[in-house]
Image 1 (cartoon, rainbow, N blue to C red):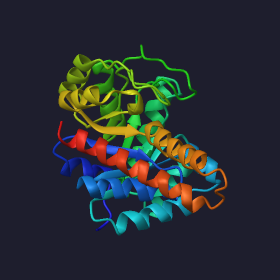
Image 2 (cartoon, one colour):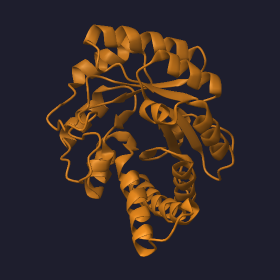
Image 3 (cartoon, rainbow, N blue to C red):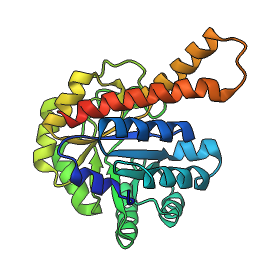
Length: 275
């Protein structure tokens, strides 16, 4: 399967697109296995936090690109929540075709300037760019469900920066381990009508299945999920080790974890693609 960008996947998908964060090789393998079972395209996301955990981008990026290339379904590899331009440039040099540049912690004017510069640099290299206006809750574990993106500000931000997709705040929050987030579906519809680029829902692990389906119906296109897969992975490892306290070979319990993640990815992709 030829390498594709997140933009390619979004254009090909008739409904929602699942974008799942990779922590280690097993996650990438499981996500693609789950996507193949669902016969759906998928996005493998490598975050700046993940790069920090591994100590370097290249090893995991090269592995994800290889997995994407051999997949039976379209798979994009995407750099997620990059706050450092140098990391964006490294990702592009490695062959990653889409990035999310996150300048949301900066004052609005500085956010616009930095994002516009990165977007222009990326577009010269045919790289697709996602950005975020304002800060979506939960990056430091503090949920902020009251944060909202204003349609007029979103339109102005996209026009000023030239980005290809926009992450918006509509009630979800990063790092939620419960699935009780309440989304503002009316606002999603208003944003979809106003904003000329695809909308991205971050913090989707905290959103119930029915609400995810409604979010896609109201206009969300790219659905980011990380914590939900980590819960499945960790739960499977915990159960396997509890059943066999003498286990020492990580392949034994990582196999269970990989299967659990693949199952969850298949479930979520079927949910998003039939919305």
